[in-house]
Length: 294
Image 1: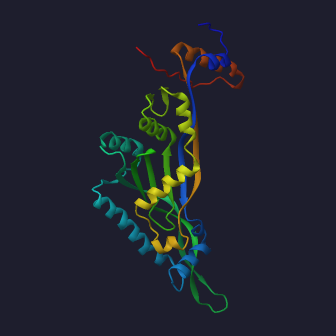
Image 2: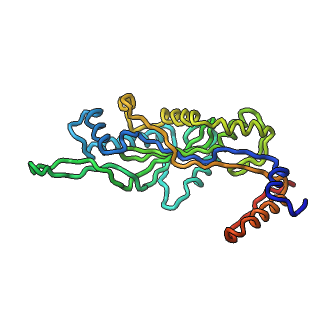
């Protein structure tokens, strides 16, 4: 191979597989009307029929929600873990996935205290009458987050994290590559996977089509499916009145996989990239990773 190939030539002539896809996705789940103090007051007075809103009303609701999560763990014979400080949750989940003998279902539930946005009550005084009254304000607190690690037959591994205190915001994490792997397996298409990418595929065009198929509508259906299967802090009456989770993007990582035909091509490619960018400052951390076929 000529050592003076340009980056453009290498990508044009020596790429054996090219795939664009969504990678890791982190989604917020929240009830929009409960993200401000006025909405919280309206929830307890109009929806729950309370004469006034107070953080004293939040504690029984939180206690019931936590009890429902822990009861779900007992009823489904799931481990209920307490994550140690600094423990890598993904490594724990990988161990459970390696031992899993199911295609779909929750693997375990873990909890850990984390700082979260919450609501609390502060006392205020009426300047005319001198009487004190409770007032709902936004604050922060260290509260338990419940991580539900699971497998989905269409999307593969994911986790859903619930805050255990009002307004019970949640986060959903899934992976576009895992979705594509499940679809390839279902279609009977041979492929070789890397840790979070693809090394080869018998039908590259079909692989790209499957990656493109992971749409907002599919993600929405996936989230609604699991929200319907797992415990929620809001009663059916609350949900019927419009207090339902809505999804928004927290973080989305996109992936472009380009597999080169041999290790030497990769070395030439990175040397050319570094040479072309020396005027930006010499990089002090560059790694060349490749797979050797025997």
